[in-house]
Image (cartoon, rainbow, N blue to C red; front, top):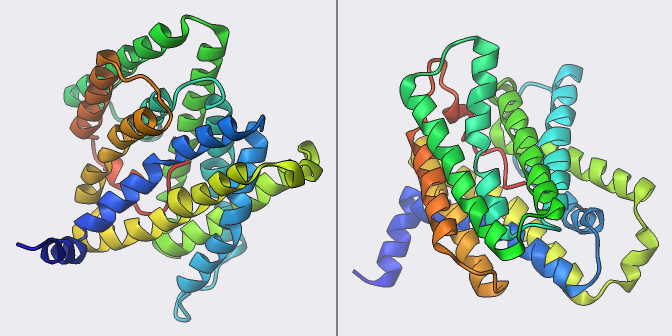
Length: 319
């Protein structure tokens, strides 16, 4: 079978789009780290660059997803969209960028990938249903994997306040991201996944840019080297907006569960991209922790009502 033939077949059945989406999302932490290395730039500035580039793309996504036959959005819908944008792209991204100032990209992706377990725990609290023994075992495997992966960063940097603070910021990002997914299920059916992604993403861009205008230094943007601008633009296109489109294509062809399974490639790709592009060391602890977290996530079987299918809707790119 020729390369062109199997690429066409994978494009038709959605596998190609799911892998492309996972690849794009996995590169976000690498672009952040490359931006930090190019100049003494802070997390808020990097996030403002990302969202400044992403805003017209999100607006374009919302425009492409418009449907003249769709029900008009109510004031309550707009409030939901603004709230989801606040948690899912603004707070989660801001906390994540703060964490990446002090921890490796590999550990960042390992912590963020725990968000399905947090979605499950939030749903358990809301429904007051006890999780199954299989689910509890899966949670234990996930957090054991995080502990094993944490040993890698301890070996590289030693036990330090900066490492713990960075890990705490990224875990807070995972919490905010999980809250976003819990809230998504209440409105995505009415608004539509692509439309909501464009509108919620646009709202988050406004939050970030307002924050930067009030607390940042917009005048310093003119002094940033081209490499910082380049990585901000790459984050916006490759790791934010385009993966949303690819995910939607994959979901339409493969379904949510199979697309999510291929999304397990994301943390693996981040670890190896960090090793190749950032010269971050690769250890047995990191690979072992990564394998355990992925195993735990794939074993999650929530009690009815189902949780993870909601979390896997194609409404968001990586934070």
